[in-house]
Length: 382
Image 1 (cartoon, one colour):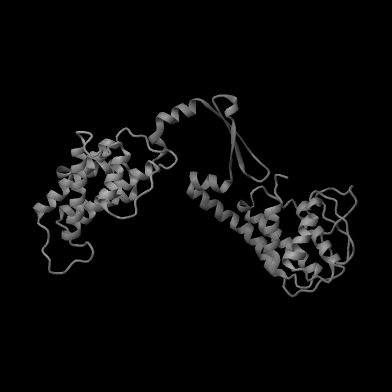
Image 2 (tube, helix red, strand yellow):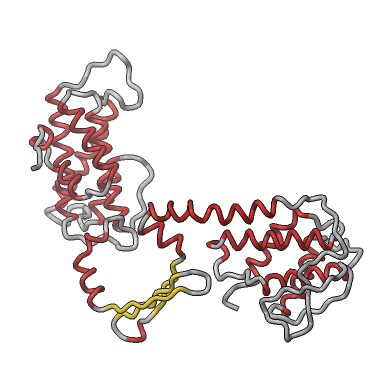
């Protein structure tokens, strides 16, 4: 049962606006504050009333994809809203122009009253008289008249679906048509991204939507998003802890077993080379990313080392080993921004290789630069 309060009896358009946007939390709170202030003879009625009208105007303009005025005057908000709703003042060309002109003048007058009489507007003097209850009622009635015109004009107007913040159920007339004439099929790709194939109407209208797990959970089930985040934090942290455990000043052991390049094509792709090599020993790489060798080599030489290189063989070996590690460890993803755990594994591999090859001036500060190079230049789509 809806409780009718004294404000609703006097100015029902405020409740109409509140009920029109039940999901708008700020509008609901603003309405409740206005009711409390009016029914308890509060001092903020004028300011709350004025800002409520502006809020309705801004909401409608936003729903219709319009740029919201920034000058802060209610007159401009009201005028632009009415214009967008097809009630533009044509300066006497229409008999209705007098009505529109009257509403604009009314908005002007309300702004003036708010500036001069509102007890909490702009920090008023402590000894000014409080606005009488009779004048407050007149102010509310005037604002109600403006709201009534705006809301009745907005009735039946279709918001711009691109910009609207109204809930899905508001569009049941569209939803039923889409649901009845659309076929969906889904699969999960190698990166864990949900790929939804959408066939709407004719076959040529087919297209794919790609939804990473994080995005799906965030928009459909926020609590599930938090639960999954808690679950994967341990996985990512384990890799980060392993990376942080490698001392920055550790010295390379020429006989240390490291992922290096192997020319024997009979070795399975998933096997990282097990030969014991020396950092300056010439190695070969003819794998999946062989066309990236020169690009990565030039990046390390000219961008990271700024051309200051004493042992180019080491740099070339590092380049090939990095690419081989990316291939053997299956570290490439389609969307790097959605796979933080994979980034951590790439950091770990890169850090180990930098320590192993121990190239002068190429310290661990460059780990992130190399990881970013991979993110920009190697994609799981290749």
